[in-house]
Amino acid sequence: MTMFGKRERAAVTMNRDKVETIIGIGVTVKGNLISSSPLRIDGVVEGNIECQSDVYIGQDAKVVAEIKAANISIAGEVRGNLQITGRVEIAPSGKVFGDVKASVLAISEGAVFCGLSQMGDSHLTSKQPNLPHEQALPSY
Image (cartoon, rainbow, N blue to C red; front, side):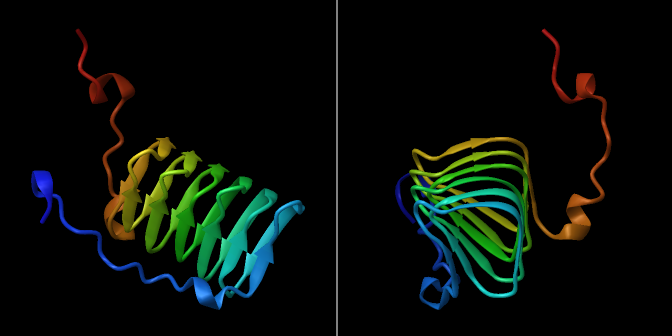
């Protein structure tokens, strides 16, 4: 435990050494990316990303996409919704503009997250009550 009772960060299960596909700096991809192996993006991607494994968004990356993956680590900028079965990590340099559905959401100090988050098992997130917006926020 550290100051304010915060727990030490758990070890990350993502293995960056096994990345097989890299979208490098200076590369722009427009369309759908579908991968069964780990994917690293350091360039620009516009479209949709479906990965059965881990996705790494590098510090210089700009991604405008709906992303479905096992885990994701974000150090660059992502604009779009994330549907992640495991862990979402947003590094201090990371920016996410979109909604996140994941089992775990870890946002580092300095990171930007603008959107809604749903965490936990998929059966729990799908059974949330549908409340009108006025009831969700108190009026003053």
